[in-house]
Image 1 (spheres, helix red, strand yellow):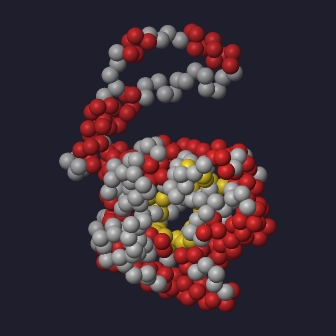
Image 2: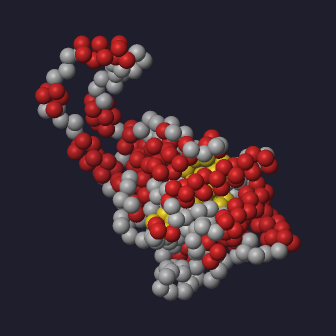
Image 3: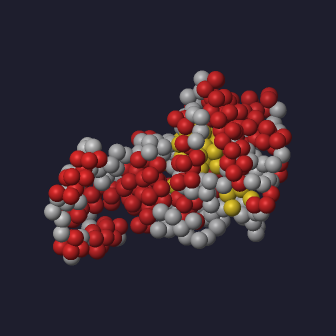
Length: 392
């Protein structure tokens, strides 16, 4: 065991759909067998994961009877207890069945919308039974190829009504669950409503029970749109709305690849871990570190467990690199020098008139400020040297 071996305190989780991914893609069938969820729990425990997450139908096949549902759940709970894993997050599959071809909460057919809300209620019952604290909503079919099919404003209203109803459902039942909304710009729909974390954060502010709802940003989904995952996560953290996070890797501009964490854009992965761990001085994120990714299609089941170990190991290596970077004396000096005068913001804690007088009285030489070098080139090079192992 070394410093990069996962421990329960790291709160690493994987979904049944991640390590259970059989390698199917739009151009070819599965390359790995379907694996029993009980066996996946055993495998995750062996590689050092803390928890396992799931969609309702990852565990309970669509259309199962109540008796079969209870048998499956009981067997799964026995496996969790035997291997010491928890289920911190569950979600509801509102995208696979053909009934959701025009959306779930936003579908034009009221019966489809009713079915989607009812299916979520059943999934929330399952989440409570498994001890989950977070329930994620990813609206994979909540979008359109042609906006002529519906008023997009009505789509937002339908989404809001469904979430308000489901918030009231967990409140009425006394479930200790929070909701986390997951954004994505496109795929499988041509365009998906509420496409980015920023869209989601505003939408949450319009909900009747916004205190119960936060976000679940995903690296691949933000990167697909050419956005900064770090900035989106920072905004969510600053708002107190980072309820969950999906870690993976993605090449910009590609389809949703769900690659092993850190296997693309190592700089971005480093900065994200630095933010989550709070090594630069911010309050750290304390929730699960969930890997929403899957092994290459080239792999057998041994390769799947290599993939899972790799996600966790890379995170822990980047955590150690971030700690060393932020403890580096030169780094601290450069950052401190760039933040000159931080404690002297004249408009903080004053009335508007007082702030205006203080600002007008302050002597500021913009030409002198413009000539001042900030040494960010040097700062960035130091960061690269830590990433490459040349420092620390």
